[in-house]
Length: 415
Ligand SMILES: Cc1cc2nc3c(=O)[nH]c(=O)nc-3n(C[C@H](O)[C@H](O)[C@H](O)COP(=O)(O)OP(=O)(O)OC[C@H]3O[C@@H](n4cnc5c(N)ncnc54)[C@H](O)[C@@H]3O)c2cc1C
Image 1 (cartoon, protein in one colour):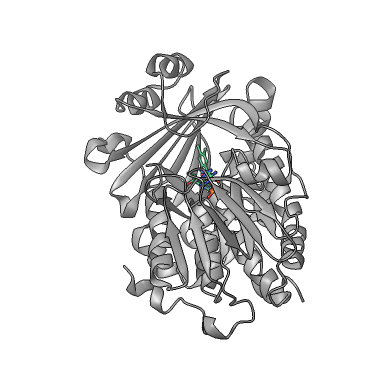
Image 2 (cartoon, rainbow, N blue to C red):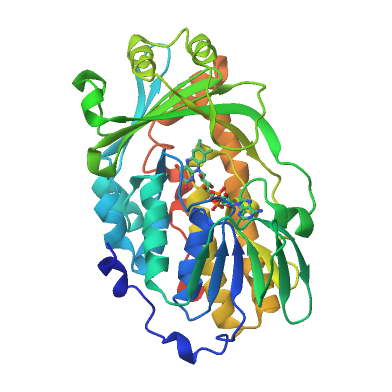
């Protein structure tokens, strides 16, 4: 696997960069966002230390969709081959009515996505995506990966940041990036806007092996069955060897963390009116894991001096546009470009980075809420949605989301 990354490392030798001082950039959190940032910054020569609170680097078992804008980033970072090796490329995305099973619309992906955006639309097992970044980091001698390292607090000063870990250890860095997710500690200190907004939606997730899915229930497409206050998404993962299911419904539960067990009785009750195919799919799962879905209002003050935020810590969003991890990867690229532009002036770079990101990420945050309403529509809303999608204007290659899937052009951000 490592061989994929050797050619990807930036041509600039890291010893020669002006930022290559002794103090590392500290990153709180070794999720997809934290590791993406570590790889992207270290490949430019910055010494980086990732501080992960868990005992091991890893990701929960579930699928993730990757829009063309993310493949554009992989291409820019030289990671496309590594991702291709483990991803799956669905030929289309289909929406069905959850009650009747009727097809509302099918959007072709594959060549159609490539033709529209220049890059493919793929899906990937979260652990595989995380592993690509982890392996890429391990190849770089200037990345230090630390586990059991929970960031509790930090003291910023004019020329460095002192970070305090839960076990009492203190570390110094030239900067701190809070990539510590939805319940970010670093955000509490920088933005101070309290707990995330509970959306009232929860998601149950499960992954099956291909052999456990009868042929009549299998589809190569990404499928979404939408209905009143519920929907189910399914798609293959890992070259088609696995099958991902995410069932979402409205509920008043609130649990921090992403690993609680789901209540099958509640799930069955929410999908009581679903068509037989959906019920049969749900019945294949013995154990569900649960996510309480939260987001936040967009803000534009997530950088302060030598401290900034990235990924869900900066702009947590509902999953309805399947962009959270992708936006974290875009963040990492923009951060690197900002540091290049300011020639290592960290505080100035963090302001430039925030300025370049907050409107785009804010738009994704707000549009994702709207898409949640579209998927869960009932009554006239549902009829309107079906009519809009079926008359072609909204479905033609996600016309309404072109701004998002076109992505960013890293080379022209800070001219
Ligand atoms: C149901 C669902 C479906 C989704 N589908 C998609 C999709 O299809 N496509 C997509 O792009 N995105 C999707 N997302 C969003 C995506 O999962 C997140 O946006 C992404 O995981 C954010 O990554 P992150 O690294 O910013 O945060 P996280 O993944 O939350 O990582 C944070 C890391 O920081 C660590 N940490 C936390 N606090 C501390 C601390 N104090 N000190 C040290 N370490 C700490 C945590 O242990 C964790 O490892 C989905 C989300 C959900 C809930």
